[in-house]
Amino acid sequence: MTAFLPGPAEAAVFALAVFLLNATPGVDFLLTVSRTLQSGARAGVAAALGVNAGCVVHALAAAFGLATALALVPAAFTLIQWVGAAYLIWLGLGMLRQARRGGAGVLPDVVPAPSRSFAADFRVGLLTNVLNPKVAFFFLAFLPQFVPATSPDKTLSFLLLGAWFVLQGLVFLLLLVALAERLSRLGASGRVRQVLNGLGGVLFIALALRLLREEPVVA
Image 1: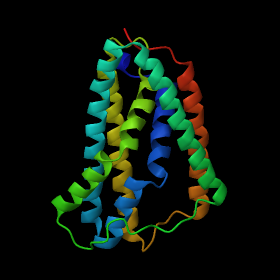
Image 2: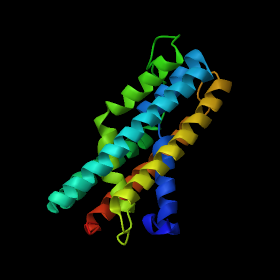
Image 3: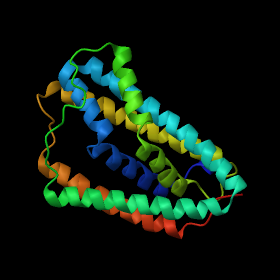
Image 4: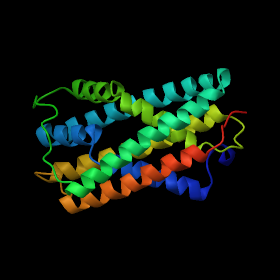
């Protein structure tokens, strides 16, 4: 199995990047916190499960879509490199701007309805994630960097990294639900948000530059 996954150093970078992505307040983060604060842990867990189900959809679509594109048009890898790097740089710069402004902000009322069924909250999380094109593009830009060049099956490596991404994200969101349930407002200070945004911005820009140096992973 190790042949399909990156080595220890690369795996550590991957885990850190996924953590910073999850810890930086975004749509999924705010939705999970909002539903927990409005309707309790049950609603937060349902939204978190829906969000991660959406990530599964994106991972599967990206894995098979990317594999097909690379098989049919090898030059597609170069296109993905440049477009993906541009997106990561844009994302990183946005995070650095947030850090410079102090990272403060009030949680928006993402889902105003205070009472929903478990299935309804799951559906909200799923659709919020699936209908966000930035999530799909992030999978295409991010995961290929960590597919080992020597992997005997690039698609399987992509799927394993996608599963890692989803599971780590789910653990983070469930811990976030537990924290939000105990607090009347998010426990992270503006300074913590500022640091996370700053680290995330630097990391994503570095990943973009690294992506431009990568060789195609096609067999």
